[in-house]
Figure 1 (cartoon, one colour):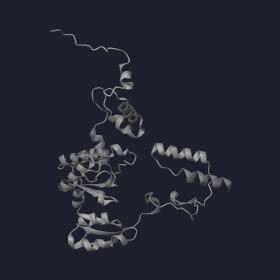
Figure 2: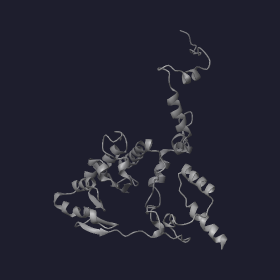
Figure 3: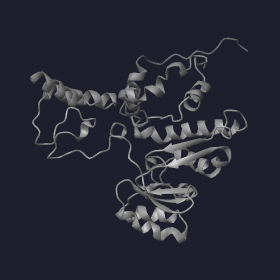
Figure 4: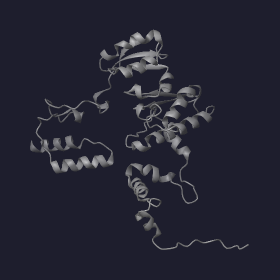
Length: 311
């Protein structure tokens, strides 16, 4: 037997280009190559293709290990840690959230008897806009995605100190298995009949009459039912201070007044308010914040600075 390793020589040069531009049905790969190239250039996917100290070298070794991620997520000195995934493309959002939840659950499950495990340090996972990634089967949700991980948490996590809070404006689009495992329900105003039926189906029969008031609740008012309260109640949730409220207020269409001291930039002005900024620069800023996926109140700051200079 020969000890020489076999070598393979291409039949012709530029074979890759020929495959790319080939018109044969069996060799057409330009679409797949273009799709891969666009993903590699997408800055929103840098955390996936260029993860910094977690990027493996040629031998598969990394500068930072998984324990550093868990330490930043679970070992923070603050009681609340926010993982902002708003800039993640929808095409990978479901799989990414499922991976994060499995890592957190498995680590706390197997470390449940350790000082930083689930039983010693109970954890509550708050899932905002849950209908986007824990929808019903058949809505484009993969079996190994976030829905499967959340189902496991709501079914088994309580024994190991891991809970879940499902927050959604469309409960009718959330998986029925997940809703049925919720021990406490905070139901705010709902006018859609399908959403009300799904919330009603998650509570006991003798309390369904209380949920008939959902369409007439005030803003911030909720019906609370479940294990967290001794008796079902109708409660008014206290609003946070204006400077700590989410950016979810309705914009003023007409009749607004520009206030340079306002802490809510989206609430100032209106269509009758005369523009006082450079349109070219303004639309450049629109494209800039769009690319950066980081909204900033640049318009109001520039308008305020110009107003001060005019004085």
